Image 1 (cartoon, helix red, strand yellow):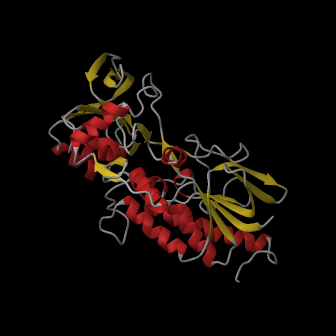
Image 2 (cartoon, helix red, strand yellow):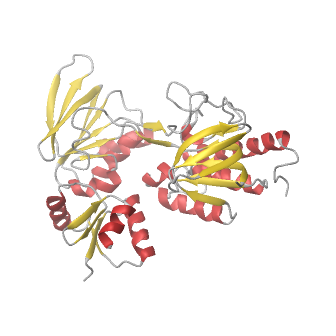
Image 3 (tube, helix red, strand yellow):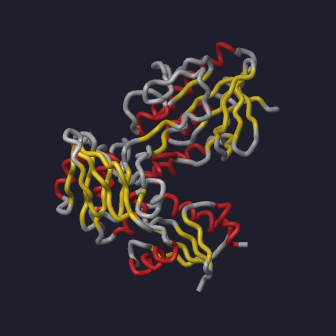
Length: 76
Length: 312
């Protein structure tokens, strides 16, 4: 299983940008669609304290929103 | 430094259309934008762009981008910090500390969501306060939410959230101003209650949003509604921070244009939602972008008959 997990929703433009960015960099990820898996989504909300997507998580680190600089820092 | 005939600021429907028209006129053109698609990316289910019975906003912008790319236009992915005059030229300074120079500019920088500016809005951003119902809606399953606004965006947010939220409180300072076809659709949302001529004056909570304080416009009576989400859809402000005071604006801070997309500064044009053009629609923005490019070309042909790469 990929160590990078992203939380997305189907009509979210920033989620698409995040996926495109990871695909471009060749980073594998597990995607959780918050509209399909509500329990996983609520775990993410509990962990991050944020009720917003996209979220990228790697271990205990996470990035809220589409922020390439922060994403690069976590992926290093 | 390379001097362009035309710099287009923004790559939404107006900017991309202007790009295609400018290149086809033979203008040496660069388009500068921090993203592609602009506000349209945030729209789903567009039903009034001719040629498509129904299309998602991002899908439509992908089509615009494909068409733009066929014309091999120079592109710079960056935000614009400053637009200024330097003798006869325009200078665009980007947020990547680069400078670009041109003889004419078309501003197509669009608009950004307005904030409510009430206590709690900043503190609870992403902790219940959202500006994107299509993104965050699924995280509000079976909980009560408020939507602030009464226009098309607010009504579309209500339609999005009807699939998830247990209660929807639609709070609008005015009567609904949404298109009749959309306003009609929300009548079918059983869990929706509209508070027209009401305003939200505070968003309250501890870690996350727990309630909103609502005030009645006429009597100033206040009451609290328990909600876990607040979706703010109260309209848009033009992106003009990079433009100085020599460029005239209207009361809505939009860049004033005439029917040829000309601003108060010769050689500077504006198109789409950032401009004072009546009605903000994708199809209008695209048309205005085309018009601005043609008028910029005419301006350049007349002012620089021997210098521009026109008719090449």
